[in-house]
Structure formats: C-alpha cells, structure tokens
Image 1 (cartoon, rainbow, N blue to C red):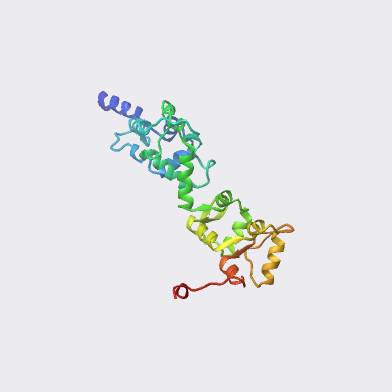
Image 2 (image 1 turned 90 degrees about the vertical axis):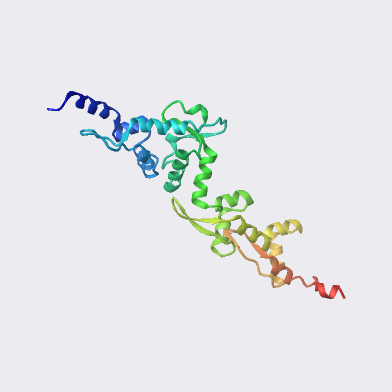
Length: 262
C-alpha cells in the first residue's frame, strides 16, 4: 500500500515522460534520424533525470517541447529552395558525420529554419538547401573542390582531371566518399596548375591549328607534353609546361635585367 497522492504524482510524471517510440512520434522523425539526433547530442538535454519510481522512458515531454521551441525561435523568412528535416537522412547524403554536424548546427541556431515551416512537428521544419549542402561539403572537402566541381568550373572532363591528379600534375588530398575516396583540390592547387601549364587544345585554337599538328611541332622541337588521356580513340587532356615551352623557343631572347641597365 502507498499513499494515494504518491500514486497520483507517479501517474502524472509517467504521462510526461516519453519512450523512444513516443519521442519519435512527437518529433516526427524516423528511427534512424532519432539515433542520429541522439548521437549528435541534440536529444541529450531532454533526458529526464531524478525520475520517480515506476517512471520509464527516455525523454521528458517538457524538455522536448523546449527543444522544438528553441529551434523554432531561430526561424527566419526564406524564399529559396528548402529541405525538410524529415528528408535530411542517410538517403539525402551518405556522409553520416556531415549529417550529424548539420543536426548540431540546427540545434545551436547556426542553421536556421524557414519562418513559415515552424508551426508543426520538428521533422516538418524546412531549412535552406544551399546552406545544408554547404555544411555537408565543408565537412567532406574542407575548402577544396571535388573533381566534379573542378570540371564544372573549368569545363575540363572529369576523367582528365582525375588522371592529372593521379599523375601528380595537380596537387590534391583524398577525402571520404560514399563509394570510397575522392580527390579534393584546393583553389590554390588549381591556380598553381593553371599558372604553370597550358592546354594544348586551347593553344592550338589561338594559333589557328589543330592539337595534333601542334603536338607534332612541339615534339620536333623537343618540347614534351604531359597529361595525355586516352578517351576511346581520341587523346585528350594534353598539356605543356610553360617552362618547357619557353625553353624550346629558339627565337626567344632573354636578356638579364642587369645587362639592360648597362
């Protein structure tokens, strides 16, 4: 036998504490998202401490409400493309660590939801898609670019860029990727490559000739080309180092600055 008021207090406390299933339903998230939110530490603050006897569950409803309201309070007007928290899962990106970072920024207010989306469940809050993708990219690549991004910037073929990286022509780092490792190229590395090499096809176009003809003339002068990539029957990605190009020009006279002053 226990006093009736104690039983009533236990009943009230039990009603205010959610188990995992109730918590997922309250937030509107999936099982996988729930686990990721826990791993990110977003739900850690909602764990009920000092619970009374016979009170189970992992999260206090009041604390969950505070969490949702705190995120809602950071909302801003936004008219661009957005993505709901419900869709921010391992189908959206295979980068688990990056996804966890996005959740953490959401909880701290660094990633703000759109103002018109915060009246419902947390899973229905929408966030600027470009900001989400930027967080994922920074986590994966730092300040560098992937081969695909360099291809979009320069117009070069992805296969050629990957070949030049593997050949040691473009300095790069290796980053994690859903299918293994990816090559990460910093803006400085790309600029250094472009400052020291010229693409034969671009040079041939300026000289109103063909790449094949220009490669033949360079070869006759003993000027080596680099970076050739076989694409079917075609040879692509041929570069020549500017230093080798200058050394091979017989009619170029370089006069030391000291001699000019005499």
